[in-house]
Amino acid sequence: MKLPVLLALMLAAGALCAAEAIRGPFPLLCTPWTETGALDVDTLVREAAFVNACGVDGVIWPTAGEVADLVAEGEYEKGLDALAARAAQPDFKARLTAICPGKTSGEALSRVRTVNETMARHGIRMAILARPPDDAKTQADIDAHFRALAAIAQCPVIIQTYNGKSPQPDVALVVRLAKDYPGIYGYVKEESPGLQVNSRIAELVAAKPVIKTVFSGWGAKGWLYQSRRLGTEGMITQRPGYADLLARMWREQQAGDPNGRLADVYSKLLLMYNLGDVFASADDEMRGPHLYVLQKRGVFVNTYTRRPAAKDDKRGRKWIVDEVRLSDLQKAEIDARLEACRPYLLDACR
Image (tube, rainbow, N blue to C red):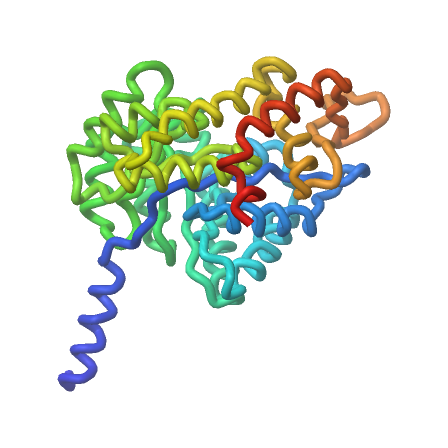
């Protein structure tokens, strides 16, 4: 083999194995729906642009639950393609990240292929957020799935360790995958249930540099402790309406909190999170009043939510579209809380 060709191959291999900077705040977008229950692609793209402008490092769509129960055939591809077109523009700095779950391994892998095609079509570098498939029963099943995924993935993959339907991958398994596929794995969203999440975070952080980045999950409600004391380097949360708060928290923490503002920014985030506890049902706490916030901030045009209809729906509907309706008193409370956050919001930085 000629020397120039050999050098080119060596450089390519080195680039593949080099750790990519995937860290920081990675908000999940809230999927917007029209009054008829269709995917509102224009608003989805506007939401991504807003989150990017807030200074976050990643933008994720859709949620795993939406892929499983809400996003219909063709909508995943349509939404992802529109987001990729926007991410290809020079002002878009956040890493577009696609969720690739599946009821089966094959279903999840088909979504990985969609991501590959989307990247090629738009000439961008994305990332994937992947959890074990729903039908995984053993650690061997999980291992086989992620090895099959690594064989076809053309971008870094963040492993989400909690599914709720399948076993969690052992820390040793996650580390082994990162060793075997350094160009693909090594990024982890750790959100085990209960208190074990913190011990698992500590184990994963101890496995650096094989493990490159550990993200806090569960809405980043434990991020301040997990970041300052345990070493997580980012958060993944479905809170796009507060992307500027997430970005400000991250910048303050990375700078060493020189002005002592970190705890205050974090407390403002929790103040807004609490709206879901006060004004929404348990299964709607991540949308509910937060859709009003997105509307208030000029991102969303409505507060509709789509959910599956019952199998025996008497009207034969596949979907039911609900509108979040808030009283004037509730809106006044939300507005007051937003005003308390004003010093840290994107609007105040313009």
